Length: 329
Image 1 (cartoon, rainbow, N blue to C red):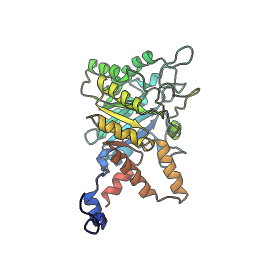
Image 2: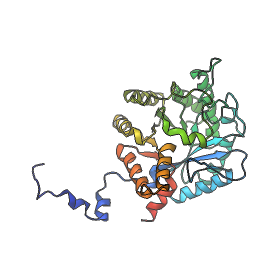
Image 3: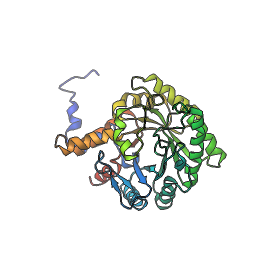
């Protein structure tokens, strides 16, 4: 720039709300958002999640209601997590055609499938009695290749139930390729894969583990989720997933990994998603309950930061609420 103050006055473009909207570089639309939803087998009423005020484990009936509300708010997609009544070592409920997720996917597909994108988280931790994301060896380690066989079966079951997008979150090596092959073989070549490509071993997942009842019964997930210290590794994981057939890639968590979102966005030519995870949600809700922060402004600011960092799609528990707030402006 050659011109200087007083000729140049950047504040001219900040003078009014209308001007700020007009020149905003990053804007979050309801259609950019995906609402995570939990559905639990065997409950008669929705169950509140103590660490996530306002979020519940749904019955099939209340899930349908929540889905309609999200559609009315213009939310772009719904991603489903299931909690079965019975768990076992191989996570049998994950690919059971009569399992809770498959039933719920059929419900959502028939009721709102033409108005939003129906997605399914694809993992085993919600379904296993040990809480890990895969099949265990006799020594208690996660068996990567045996787990791929389970993921392939789950993908076909979710697609048959109506999922338009499957989202593998277990961070197993080769998971996207195994799932793509299984989907194509089963006749579901039109079903997309949104890979949790850069999923970090994060302390921000605590409230989710209450919501999905999936806390590991021993150890942790650091042997398969990414080390928070590593950025280059995230790009390697993303490129491997794309080589295996991923249609979209995700970074999780979002707020503490904005640099990773930006690096991924600059490196790929597919949609980039980011998951504003349970711990991010819980911190804001807890601080707002104490009157320490302006809740509405914090929600908008965090979502905008994720969008500004380069995310095309944001998974957030505030999706419906934020969509309604934008419609009311």
